Structures are given as C-alpha cells and as structure tokens.
Length: 332
Image (cartoon, rainbow, N blue to C red; front, side, top):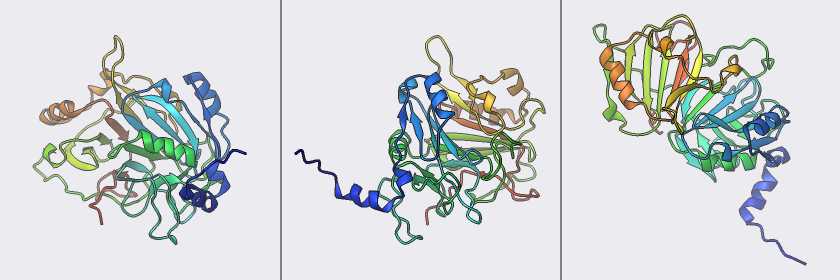
C-alpha cells in the first residue's frame, strides 16, 4: 500500500480551517471558458486561467456586493473567486490599497493566534487578503477570505506594492443599484499634507523611487493624488470633465504585437461592461491640471499603473465619508 506523506503544517491547517476554505477550484484555458465558469461559481469555488495572460502587472479587485474577487494581469482577467468579507460591525473598508506585507504562514495577533494562510496585508490595522472560511456571506472581522488553494495561487502571482481595489457594499443586491465604484467607508488613511493656498501641485518622486503607481482623481475635491508603492509622491489641483469621467477604474496595459501601451477599463460594480475597453483619449485630454504636473505623471506611468476616477471625496476637509486611498501608514 502506497504511503503518502503530508507536511504536518498542512495537516494542522486543514484541521483548523473550515471545510469551505479548502474547496476545489477549476482551471480554464480561454477567456470564454473562464467567463462561463465565473458566472456560476458557488461559495468556496474559484476559476484560474493564468495562461490567458502569462506576463504583465497584476491588479486585484474585490466586489463586496457580489462577494467575489477578480485578478487581472496586463489588463486581462485571469482568475475569479468567491470571497467572504467583513460582517456587520466589522465591514471591510472600500478603497484603493497596496499590498504592504506578504506572509504565507501568518497568524492573527488579535484573534487567538488564528491561522491566516497566504496573508497579503492591505492596512496596518489588520485588513488583509488570506485563506479563510467561505460560508457564502460576509463573516470575517474585516479581512477578505479566499479559498485556500486560490490564496496560494494569488500569493505566488502578486508582489509587494501591488494594487488591490475593494468596491461595492456587502449585503447589496447583485445587479442592483451600485453604491459607486468605491463607496467612501472610512478605514485608516495615510498622512495628509494639504496643498498650500498658493500651491497648484506638489511632485516628490524621491519619496518612493520605485514600485507600483496608482493615480486617484476626485472630481468632488478637484484633486489628483499619486501614490507609488503605497507612498504619496504627488498631488495637484485638477478639473475633470463631466462626461465619461464619473466613476471608473483603469489600468495601463503593456502593448502587444502591433499595439501601443494604453489605458484600459477594469470592470467594477456598476461598470461591468467596461472591461477591456480602451480609454477615449479625447475625453482624457479635457482633464485640466498644471502642465508641469501632467508631464511629471506621464513620465512616471508604466504598464500596471492604476487610475481611479471618482466622485468620492479624498480630502479631510470634505463633508461626508472619505475614500480610503492606499492605507499605508508607517508600520507600527
């Protein structure tokens, strides 16, 4: 009789995690097959198709309304999974986050040393992606639970500083009215240094010389905020056009054979039909900002850069809730 040896660590983990966290997934080999399987996922299920786009920058989006997460590589969807986000009183914050830390063997310092396999930290106050229970509804204390095998695949695909977008609202009807691409819902934020009254922009790329770039444009505040590797390197006063630039997420895609690098829309709640559509540059050209700031940002953009255009406020002086933009306070 053959003897199969299993590492003790995995046996222990298997006993501690709910059975739903160990659910099997499916592989796909084409965008059509992935889409077909993604449409009928049940709690704990996932589909993974890395061969569709084998190289390029990675972007992860989490839809709290649908309790799903989607992985894009070079602007192409390569994976979809069901998730379980924060329950009432512990809601997962929405916003644009960076992966601050990765630890495949992490354990909670707050909840009885509970295992959090393949943890990818989004905030220093405890919100992360990791393997966990998947009952089909929000049940975590704020983290985003993933199937164990999917969390392992995702862990091997992302890198520190990568962008994760959390949007929607847990408990909202899927297909119902969207709460906006990113509903402002509190959460910790990085330090805010406002522009002086006579200051139209600030550009300090030396604060973070390398890493993933994220640009947030807030129409309600008239501000652009640029983060690199989770650290703010620039902000400016901007004016955005009314049409098309309401609430969207875009990623800068590396050009393929015969194509140039370009901005492409990412599908998020309320804008599912956007996926893969190139940005109309005639609309983008109507955005007004200091010319020196525009040139500096254009020089920093590389494939994988993410841009969020939103109505949500980002300034502390704004009324109402604020959008979480890359919660990346100094490590405690």
